[in-house]
Image (cartoon, rainbow, N blue to C red):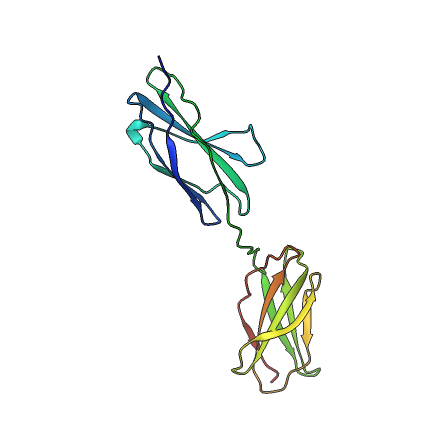
Length: 193
């Protein structure tokens, strides 16, 4: 009596948020159950079953969404036949998830005009500790461009280079030491009236 032959992976891919796997089933006619395993790349022994199915509910692929950007994972499978014999593990496949470097967005980005002091005061809140913030500004219909780089522990900026009657637009983005960035904030607008 021989155990069933393992299935064979034919494709592994990712989009930075999930891993898609596809395979060819076991050639053994008496295979009844399949078990898909995953482990992090560093954990050489820690194979965890993440999905099980029967040949009656056969699958040729799986989308693993319980993964983290930038991490590397390995996958294998085993098959159990109708006598309860377990196959050798399938030839493992591994993949490092893409990491697009986007961090959490800045929570709040507001502005208030102080007409007496001729200042537009910009405030924001952010739960992270970036290296610095890039503040962008545009006047009237001009495109926005980099206005100022401020330290990552700063949460406000006073723009004194403003004139009455001109509408100003601002954007903000956080920059981290590892090169990752937050998404741009929504544009805010204001003017001294």
